[in-house]
Image (tube, rainbow, N blue to C red; front, top):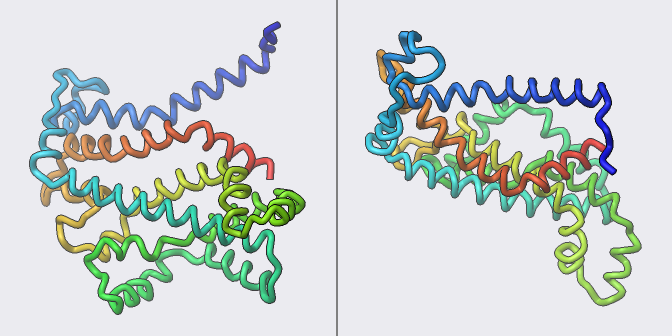
Length: 274
């Protein structure tokens, strides 16, 4: 028998729907602006909807710049960073949660302390290290500094601590090594957390602007956040081209969220409970 919605439920649904529409409005405006001409956007006379929809902005993005190459650069760096971050976070979280060793508490506090340091503080030392390694103007300069996430280690530790120790001991008694325990026992149980962390990591890497701006010089090695600046003219901003590029940049993130939506929501729910 279906449950009847109370007045509170109806009001709550209406408020959440309104809030969702308000948050979605800037994206809708961006998509509609990408279908306008630059003159219509600058003049503001056409209203929110385009009078004569045009794909000129998308054609400019794809024809006047190596946008596909930039997308591939961002995709490669984001996927590599995400996969390795999930691996390092889960392994480190497992060690901190289920193993005892000298200096464990101090080391974990030091890892958490790095979350309080803004990137602008370590930007120059990171650049000097990157330069010493000869990685300036190299895609690896974006990947290497982002392979370990202190937030990911903390999140993995909190989840793995809730796994019963008896379950791991039973697996060890059956002859499973630490790698097999991690792969067959720990990983499936923390999959919702890994999905949430993976989406956050992918989004942060995909939208990273400051660090690629510093270490990348060649146009062929640029990432998509730099494309938004590339399409700005010296004396005039091509708003329709910028909006078209922005729409195309958001597509991979939306696709990734739709694929992992169920696990992502479950991971956020479990994170809130903890």
